[in-house]
Image (cartoon, rainbow, N blue to C red):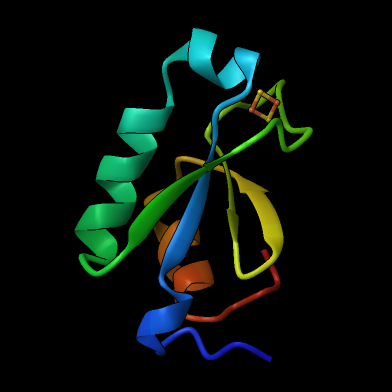
Length: 82
Ligand code: FES
């Protein structure tokens, strides 16, 4: 199981699918994550199937879609029950 505190596990895959692009959520999401986890490295990924909510990203092999800072902070610290 990946360790969320390990630097090699700081890769965040931001959805670059059409719905997220059209909603223009990627830069806003990156900004939220960067404020919470400055060491985060961003990559892009195809549609994550969460088009209706946008703000889609994948972290440690799990898919999320939220702009809620508290939820993002919890999942970045390893809380998978979100
Ligand atoms: S386009 Fe982002 S989840 Fe589908």
